[in-house]
Image (cartoon, rainbow, N blue to C red; front, side):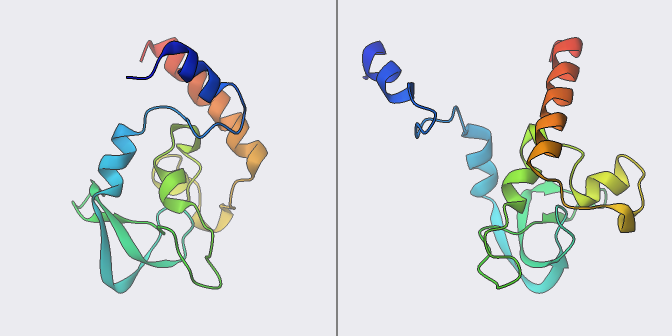
Length: 131
C-alpha cells in the first residue's frame, strides 16, 4: 500500500491526477450504451447516440447524454460528466425544464461561473440538510 507521504506528495499540486473517489461515476460509465437512433441529450439538448443505462427518466428509459463525442459540433462536450456532477445539478437543459420549470427555449449552456455559483449553492444545501 502507498504511504501517507506518497499520497501527500501525489496530491500536493493543483494538477494532481488524484481527483477524489469516482466509484459511483465508474458504475455509470460501465453502463454507457449506444443508441441506433439519435436521441436528445439531457444536458445540452443536441442529438446524441449514447445513453447512460443506469440513469432512467420518468418513463424508465435510459438518459441520453453525449459521452466523449467526436462530431464536429459536439467534440469535447462533457455532457455525461456534467450531468453526473453534483455541482452541475439543475444546470442541464432537462433539469432546467423538468426540475426548475423553465422554458426549454430560455436555457443556455452554463459557463464556468454559473457552475461555480451552482456548486456553492449545492454545497450549502447539502450542509444545511446534513447529507
